[in-house]
Length: 193
Length: 193
Image (tube, rainbow over all chains, first blue to last red; front, side, top):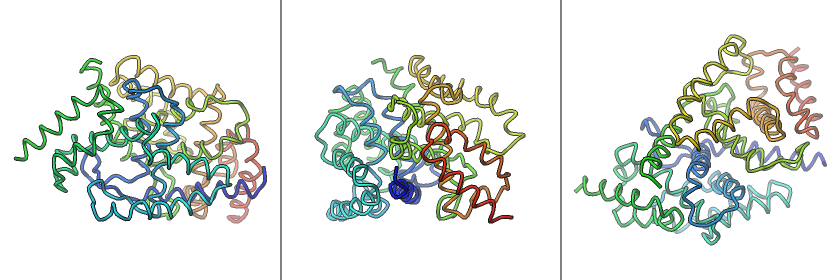
């Protein structure tokens, strides 16, 4: 171990603390405040552990967990882009790529490349692990919304079609949950009419 | 899948949200507030991923990550017991056991038993995975303290010996880091004299 290697690792871990100051739109279940991205990242890891049995494809589960822990780090520089923010979506990829350059670049090259690959795999939606991780990343805020009378759906007024499209990774990667998810969304939007 | 099984899983995941309202003594690196246990749980998972190469023993890494995600859930009922709280330590095991009964009891029995076993394994400090997980759980707040001019050491005045004893899992499970950890602690306490 070189001291330089360890000091890069500890500097990265200290920098990662900033993810606790990045706030998403999703509310806590007691509606007292918005959720930050660090605690969201933990919650989707727990969600993956609890819902693993419903995965549509065989998974390298270690990689799922690591992907979920790493995939939102770019928000330290790029901030959270709300799911239904059309303007923000136009610049998101560029902002996040610059963030990835800086943040993963803090690590020793082998480790930085490994974490960056996990982030890219999540974003590309191509592997079974990315399908499952994206589905879990949708299902956790869905549950938070159910617990807060619609949560972000009630506050920001996305359309029923936008929400169903946003939840679509659940339909394919966690198909056994889709009846419940779709029925809950239909019920919420019917109650709003 | 029975609907009852899924509803127990979603009720548990919704209840787990409360871990975001449990506050530890550790400060964020900008010293703006104390860290909550959910974001701490994410940060130790990232720490495990970044420091894995220094593990003293071969690891089932999937189990390390799941153990880190699950081991502090009991704090939802039992609250965080500060590392240097002598009175709290006397009742901690009993409070946490009751919490485990309730929280893991919300899940379908097979899943509840699996998560409870991870918590018990962490607490027993006997397996390579538990050694490593405990070391990581000590190293992350150590880094937060370094970033905040001593952090909890400065605010709550544990003795040098208490801190070195608290950090001892690092000496055995992450031995390559011990020189750095011990030197940093010695330097902090020397600066306080």
